[in-house]
Image (cartoon, rainbow, N blue to C red; front, side):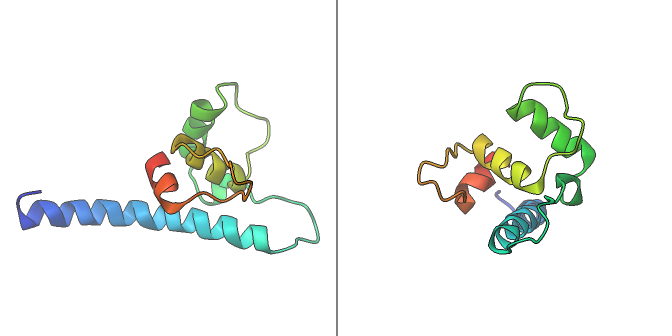
Length: 103
């Protein structure tokens, strides 16, 4: 991080990561505020690729893949768990720093 060129490259990479995390967090918070008429959770493959959620599944669950794709809320909480979140306050929401660390 000594030169402006290297710093610019790092900003580009971290901006991409930040946008992906923002998409996931905003989707999770929006879904938790809306009372759905049907209880059909959004699958995590709408926000994550197949390989991403499968790697996340193996890292968190450590069992075979499920028959159905997990929900986006599961992906949000799984990434937060990788960052050290344990929902001690029972709010269901992780801090930005925890999600960033988990990602």
